[in-house]
Image 1 (cartoon, rainbow, N blue to C red):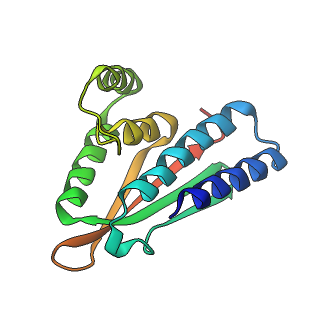
Image 2: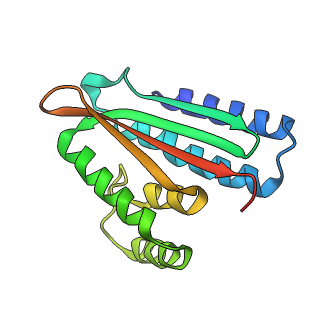
Length: 153
């Protein structure tokens, strides 16, 4: 997923949300989750599987369902699954404290890697985040994250 595609998808989602009459708070949460999810697909899809990444956004009566998927090394898939399970167990106060700790951390790289994007997605969406992993071959797996952004907070 190229950067231009990410920008186009964000603009289309924002326009659709505005046309639906979504309140500003909902649009902000939706946009935060979309930015992080699309950027993760853009930045972390393996070069040899660059055309396998995808995203879906579905509106329903309760809000929005989002799905982000891309190919990663099998070890990364296991790490993501573990991180999401920890985030799913945290309450709002623990998520905020963890976020502030990660912001102060110097463990970030140009591509991210500190977990801020995943943590932002957890803070702005309804939990649990659902993770699905399908092995593509012995070294690579397709990881899909399914999230909800509810109309009511």
